Image 1: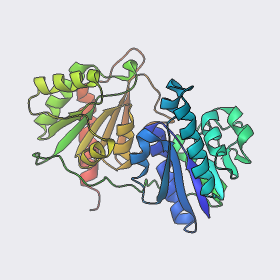
Image 2: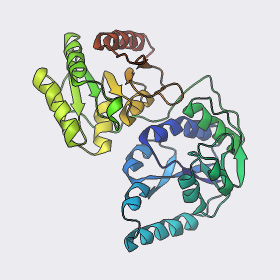
Image 3: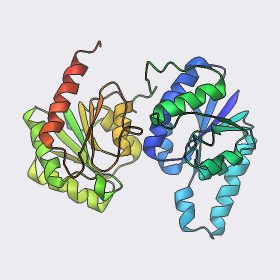
Length: 324
């Protein structure tokens, strides 16, 4: 059986789908999986060994130049490629109208969330079969349940495994323990103040670890350089391909991050991860992993670096006690 997964974005949503893929791989070894994803996240999808072929879309880019003939040729090429693959089933794990339209291009039966479950109920009009999955569950569990219903098995929700490991790669010139500080995120109200990052880097150094950080745009670069200026032992990784950052991240001792995709990736790698949530509710979409924890700011309040490091110490101790 040949199945196409449609989960185009965001990075966190893509990562939340891995446990469902891992369940399916174990319960349905007769199934092969391909995936259709936004071009920026193809390298993330490639981390899961059960994914065979990766098809990319560029909806975010296409929207900016909708009347460009080249865009329509790209879309037509994707349609031809998907149809040539002759899928037996498409699982739209996103539940949006845009993802349902992408799924439709494959010309195969589509399974997805039911009308009361999908994030955009209009998407269900394009599905051939729908499944009711409660909306008040974490995104990871919702997707695991959807895959189980679509492929005929019961996922073991008492366990959680992403099935991914960090890609090969190292941070040159750095020996010993590292703490990756993921300060960059898409919204201003989700960003921890620079001074809190600086204090966190200082506390990391006090614990014998080297702070590591990176950036993806000029504003994030300024934050990274401010941390390094205040705490000179901080290593700033230049803007790099996602796979290279994932390799460095995956070999960190500790990760402290804002509400951003790389924080979710850290937890999926099974690393001690402290997520700092300031403006979003982590209950249904926060990082999940054996050593992941989320600190949520109270309304009008803040999350203090000392609280973050106290939680980090707890997770590191827990990890040290785990069987090798």
